[in-house]
Length: 351
Image (tube, rainbow, N blue to C red; front, side, top):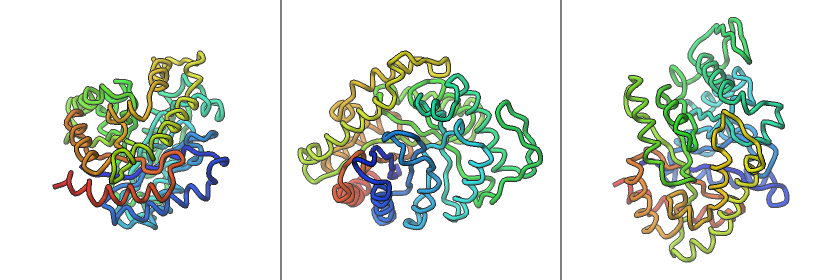
């Protein structure tokens, strides 16, 4: 298994400035190679403390590429519904060039109703815009002089520049939460899969759906699965929980607050059951996330055992993408945790 670091800003100006937050992230990114982490990832969100500090993941990853010389740079994930596909393709080509071919493209449909309101997009267009946008980005990366007529964007004889450094293009990942169709579609399209085991319980079944759909569609190999977890490592189990619990509980509350309109009557055929999903997440705590494998918190020995058990329970996955400075966790604690994990956990799991 490979391990990456993931930055999901969950702070606002009252807690930490953008300069402070991204300064912390760049510092930690500079430790990735030394500590054995093979990827660096960040998100795209808007307008609120939950993710809002990261409106363009390519910008941060270009800077992170200067701090790490080996780690892959992963968008986790870009939201086509809020971006022009030609702009996305151009930014991918630019980041791939800056990083000397280390860029990997993650895409998602978006799920926060407030972001759709900000951009004047309809929730009911989510699936159609994602499908069209993904296909247009793929073609811009793989082809030149592209002509496409879509329901939302059309182009005639357009070539995206710069051309990707990786041929035919950087790897593509599709993000999924808990809807079975999302996992099946990612497999059918032959892309890699990134998921968040926040809900717990069914991840093994969902990963199996992805692998089966990929095989049935005739794609080579089982594909790669990247799962996102919160992680905090400390020499002492009790101390680890004491330090991390408040920050993780605040993160979970922030997620539910950002999604709360699903609980207040918002609905869409493109998001079946999201009121139930958010209601379920509203019950999550640090303790329940540890029980379900959504959070790895404790001593190196405990984390090595917990991760090995979780990997077996899911049927196996390729990359654990770890949130290491979630919410207002102090930089010093995040760095100590990252170093300890790299020194004592990664080698034990990769023997």
